[in-house]
Length: 464
Ligand code: HEM
Image 1 (cartoon, rainbow, N blue to C red):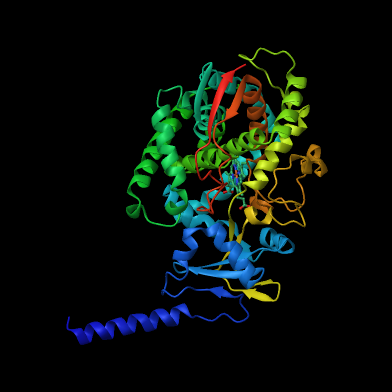
Image 2: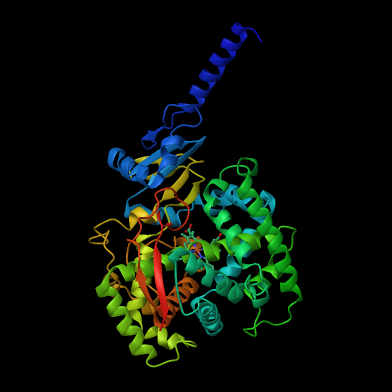
């Protein structure tokens, strides 16, 4: 190609990109476009997306669009607009997440739209507050067993410690004991592969596998593991709880070849958000002596002189420990997911703007929980604020959106709260902890899911 053809081609590319790029939407919110065609503001946005959202909100007002890698992400930051986000018929959950499900679990578009409704209904139905309660006795046995493996004393990164105990316990509870990695000797490898998959999930949801070699290897390893789990689930006649596991229910719901792929997403959803919150809850409690003291008094008053090697925590016991539950919810508030999403399918009116179809509509629970009108002293870990919530009737504080909302609100939320409540009470009853590092900051790198710690958080522990 001579230089004239090359120059002309470049001019044509730049002009067409510019035309595409500067597409005007009447009455649309302010748009942050960056200067690179197609990439838009992706580089600045990707560096620290949570900080970017806060700066953009201060500069452009409560509704703004970020143009990045060919997509328009329109952020909605006023609480008064959240109802529209969750309830409007002009926005759609499945259309918003389908691409991500293809990239992260290789589920075809056709299969996704065919089976997602049944999959959602199944998980919602199996994990109602009543059904979650039925999983409590078995979960308690699992936590006991796994916590005893920690030994009499040690020094470890708290995040890693929580993962080592909770992964096998929760997997046994939801997928069956035969599918717990501890049971079949693959715990170390499972933890490594799952951590790679989880940490790369956000990039993996947007980029093809070929750009993420290590992540893609972990994904395929997990898919093959899930395939084996499904065989065991199909063979297993009865389970330790005497009823079908969540995985066994999934097996009867998804009837195409993507069953292991749905299994992987369900596994990811059940571990990826709850386990970092468990870490944060314990770390916050230990870093605030008055909170720790109050929680320990409540735990000791409820569990009295139980055997610390074989501790039983019933649902009635959990009801006697509301303060520990407030600590869990307060940690969830402070480390809530960076963003949740819907796709606009028809022009949507918000404030004085019309959001065009095709836009990804975004709400950030992380930032919503820092609005002082709803949460005074928003950065402070204050479990007492949850006294106002009617938790007996399963009502959260107004403005709390960590589990999303509307029809697609997290179907695992009641299980998550029960699981975390039981785990935190049990680990603090069995072990005495000393924090060796200051409380880490949350990493500002991720929008998907609850927040990960930016640095290490080492603890020394001793069995009581
Ligand atoms: C503290 C822990 C958790 C948090 C903060 C959390 C948060 C969320 C959020 C924000 C969503 C999206 C909701 C929306 O867009 O409106 C979601 C979806 C989901 N969550 Fe959770 N979650 C947690 C624990 C769990 C657990 C333990 C399970 C399963 C046992 C679970 C299963 C799911 C599933 C399956 C979906 C996708 C639903 C669908 O595709 O229809 N989650 N979660």
